[in-house]
Length: 150
Length: 150
DNA sequence: CGCACTACTGCAATCAGTTGCAACAGCGTG
DNA sequence: CACGCTGTTGCAACTGATTGCAGTAGTGCG
Ligand SMILES: [Mn+2]
Ligand SMILES: [Mn+2]
Ligand SMILES: [Zn+2]
Ligand SMILES: [Zn+2]
Image (cartoon, rainbow over all chains, first blue to last red; front, side, top):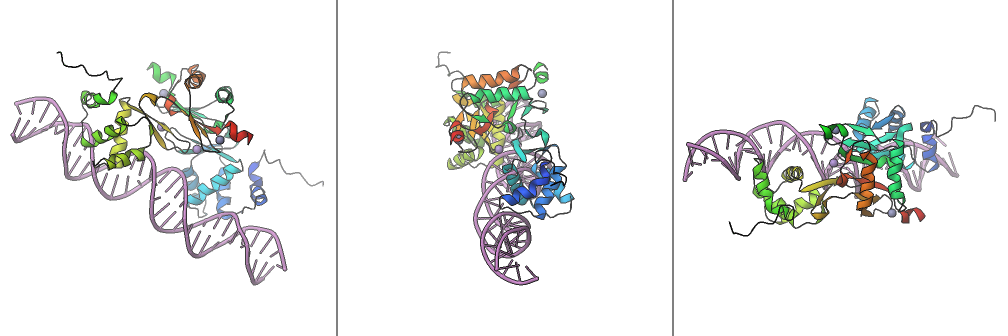
């Protein structure tokens, strides 16, 4: 075929969601479209409630349970990953930077993304016993350098 | 005075709670007594709701908000520490084994306590940037060796 | 003992997230 | 296009946790 090739799924993953759902016998609905539309314009993090709000702003009728259930299937497809903030609330990682954990200072409340070398170091600690760490689910809480000296 | 000396606070920490509260201008109430009574007979972990249930079983009237608020002050006194399960729900660490993190397999749902050498290894990863990790707040999620080979 | 100061409690509302269930609606088939 | 299988949705109820507020009650002091 000489027709223009579609960009590979791993470069524009949202373009193929419908197809991926279809392949698994799942359905493409207006609600899922709303969720995917919002996620496609999100880079980094989003919480469940932010997502719900942004879907609602986008006309389509969506209810929380549907959004959370949709996030579940998107996570199974590997299109988002979730972690938890220091308070345990869910955070969804979206896009290129999907795979990373967080460092959270309990004192000043600031937080940082865990960089690759350190993420690997943590993974290695448990790799020794055959345990495969999910990096996006890692949230390390403690006190940052600045707060400790202060 | 020749009266028998009280066991040091760090060996039977619950005996001195009233005193510790007192020293900070805080009060000793029936509700706090109920919470402390339950915690004193708990070793390891307890969730907020378990604690509430066990307080209720012990006659005294307690309401969730009071229990959670009491847990807050006990944590400030260093008598309990909290972490979060893989679903983000709070878990309180009580007693001698208070300081430890958890390893949780997302596939089979089993979990393990993180042992001392590995806890230190994680702490070292972030100690390099001056960040002091709170070990009881660490929950590492991933897939265990058994589930990976299966 | 009784007063006053203020910490603490209970309540009701609210937020984040989950679940069972009955009605609805994709989508493949004929 | 009409049909029906079955995945999906909305709803309502519920769990875990938090918060503002008004009333309650520890605790020190005279
Ligand atoms: Mn926490
Ligand atoms: Mn989780
Ligand atoms: Zn800090
Ligand atoms: Zn496992």
